[in-house]
Amino acid sequence: MNGLVWIVLKCITLILPLVLAVAYLTYAERKIIGYIQIRVGPNRVGPWGLLQPIADVFKLLLKEIIMPTRANRYLYILAPILTIVPAFTAWAVIPFGNWVLADINAGLLFLLAMTSLGVYGIIIAGWGSGSQYAFLGALRCAAQVVSYEIAMGFALVGVVMAAGSLNIGEIVSAQQGGISHWYALPLLPLWVIYWLSAVAETNRSPFDVAEGESEIVAGFHVEYAGATFALFFLAEYANMILLSTLSALLFLGGWLSPFEGWPLLQSKLNWIPGLFWLWLKVGLFLFLYLWFRATFPRYRYDQIMRLGWKVFIPITLFWLLIEIVAIRLHWGPLGC
Image 1: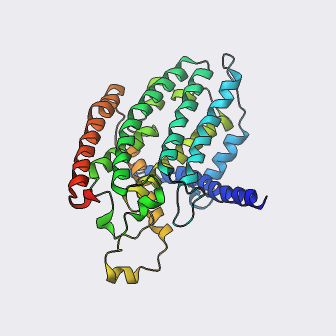
Image 2: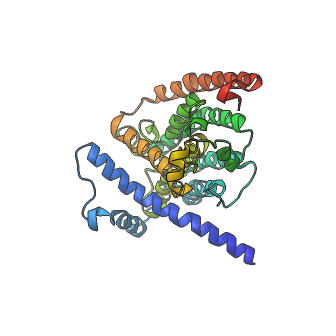
Image 3: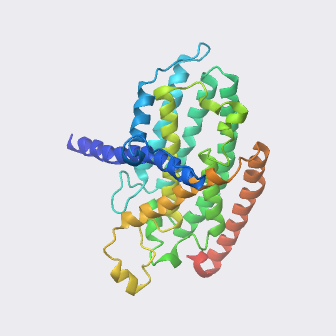
């Protein structure tokens, strides 16, 4: 019984900060994009607009849920649940230094499985809504996610080959020694492809054709409102934070200091906790998400599919072959 209570407490300790981070990521997005476009952003609710996410939560929760007449009642309700549950379950294997909810040897494989399940909720939402616009958005989203999951999987295979483990904590430990030992340098093409695939996986600009408002009226969740829409919204931003965290862990040394190999700086910065370095790296990737949205125009759908199948997958396969040769011949950092 005590073990079950401890697990529940650990889950609450993980989920509550994540929900808070999602809420204030929306605030940061509106403020940062506002400043990029020479606007102010939210500044009315609370000091500097800091209570705006709380007001948005109450607005969504109190709004009436209207179910379309042609919708399948059970699938309509099931879809947002199938989207949000994998998005939160995947965090179980993410380590934060010495703290992790489930330290399993195949953690990376479990994480890929969980992130892949979210697309079923999107497909069911499009089908169960009884709307042609929602169904079209769901099909486009499913095709896009499947396409970029292949390139992302190949990019992560390169990390697994370099570290010799599927355990995320062990992958981070294999990058000890400072910035020169991080996998971002020897696996640079795989890192870039992984990150762009992550942007496409979360349907963020410039890959947001599943929610192209000018084309298909908000995509697969066009018939959702209130709390059900909030679940899709929450899952999208939770996945953004998840993939940013995963990128920091697998390619940028996670919670490890970039100055480990520099004795003078390491002695002066030894007081900084590892979580600070981790969240600093995660914040960098989240800023890139927002920067992309404010900067780049949306790709055409055929351009997105061509990029995934004809550019990313061949590059990842070619670089994996180079890595295999380097490991066999013990060449430099690729032969780790």
